[in-house]
Amino acid sequence: MSSASVLQSANTPAVNRPNPVAVGTIVWLGSEVMFFAGLFAIYFTLKSSLPDVWLESVKHLNVPYAAVNTLILVSSSFTCQFGVFAAERLQARSTGWKPSEWGMTEWFFLTYALGGIFVAGQVWEYATLIGEGISISSSAYGSAFFLTTGFHGAHVTGGLIAFLLTIGRAYAVKNFGHKEATTAIVVSYYWHFVDVVWIGLFLVIYVLQANG
Image 1 (spheres, helix red, strand yellow):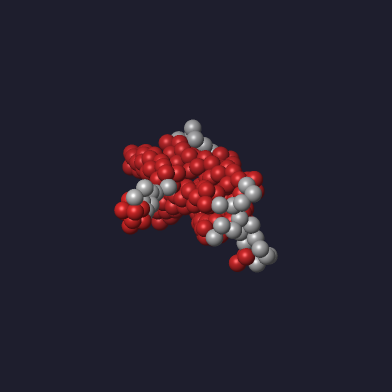
Image 2 (cartoon, one colour):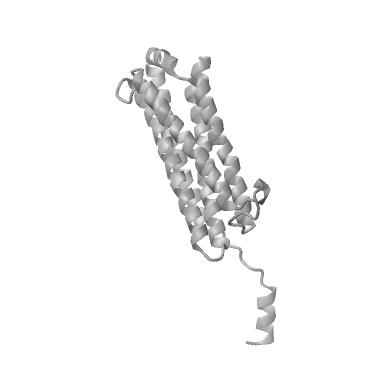
């Protein structure tokens, strides 16, 4: 290789290509946005067609209970992000007992626990509503409520599985590197997404109904 070629290579800026896993996840989440937009459309269409059914059915909603469950899920986004910060430092596990010394796995375990509490709370709410006569087959309201919140609950459950896989991978590798950190970041994208979707569902299904 000539000295001119070497000089040209040294002066050529490095091309920083975006991580294909992160890009693919963002594109996939875009399709998920459209999916939930369809569910919102179904909900609003049925509500506008059957206002009397909605007015009677929303009386069974326990808004304070749902608000507490929502706070639990929203708080999990913060713990998830703290786990991402640790992953970006390439710190897989804690160096001490203080939260400021926690690694990715400790923060992700806490996020998993909060997400599990949310899902359990949603199951309890379902059981209560079914006991009061509101089910997926009882009315159009029941179908809309259980479809929208149920699909979201399934997505949360998928996120919980992803956390376990990410934690397991962190324990399986000898050296926690950029690949493992990228996995944690991608999982956080998904988790933040399902949290934002739930905030929208909570406002539409609980808050607007309570004020309406």
